[in-house]
Length: 292
Image (cartoon, rainbow, N blue to C red):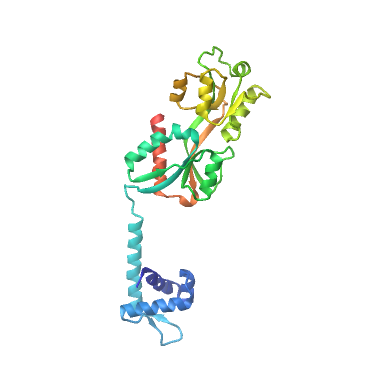
C-alpha cells in the first residue's frame, strides 16, 4: 500500500466512478482497478460492491477514505509547517556594482541568521545576463537594476535600494556646475551597453548636447578611480560612500529631476513563497533598514 493508492480511493468517492477518478489522478481505468484490488488485498475486505452494474463503495471504503483524508491533511500540515531554520543552497546572481555595495552586508546578515544556508554567487555581471539566467532556471534569484520599462510581469520585483544619479568630479575641482564641469574637464562615460550607462549618457547629453566621452568603462569602481586622479568627471548612480571617500572625489547633485536606479531583488513568480528567497530578501532588507 502507498499514499497514491489511498488518493485513488478518495478520487473514486469524490468523482463517482473509476474512469473519472483515473482522469483526476492521471491513471487509466484499468490502473485504478488494479490499485483498488491491491488495496483490498492489503486490508482484507472489499471496498466496493460489484454485485450490480454500478460499482458502489462499501461503508468500510468510506471509513478508510475518511481516515486517509485525515492522514493526508496532517502530512500536508507537517510539510508546510514553518521552521526558523532555512538551510540548503541558493544560487543568487548579483550585478557587479552591488557585489561590493550591498552583497557583503547582506551575506553577513544571512550567515548570522541562517548559517546552514549556502549562497552561491555565479560569475555573472549585468542585468540582462542575469535575467536570462533567471528565466532559464539556472539561478533562483538576482539582484539587478530594474529596467526602465518595469521588467517582466512573470517575475516578482522587490526594490531594496534606490540610487540617484550624481556627478562626480576630481578632488581639486572648484566649480560645482555640472554643465561647466562636463565642458571643461571631459566626460568619463559609464558603459552604454548597460541600462544604467544609457541613462547616465542621456543625462550627460541633456546637459551638453552631442557630448562624446573621453573614455567609456564598465566598472563603476574603475570610473571613480579615474575621476579621483583627475582624468575627468562622470555621471553615475551614487556609489557607496566608502569608495567616494577612498578616492576623495567630489559629489554634485543633478537636481530634483535627476533620474535614479532601482536595485531590486527579482525571482520567478512560480517561486513565490520560496523560503530561501525570502531569507535572502530579508538580508538585503536588513541592510536597507540599517542604511536609512
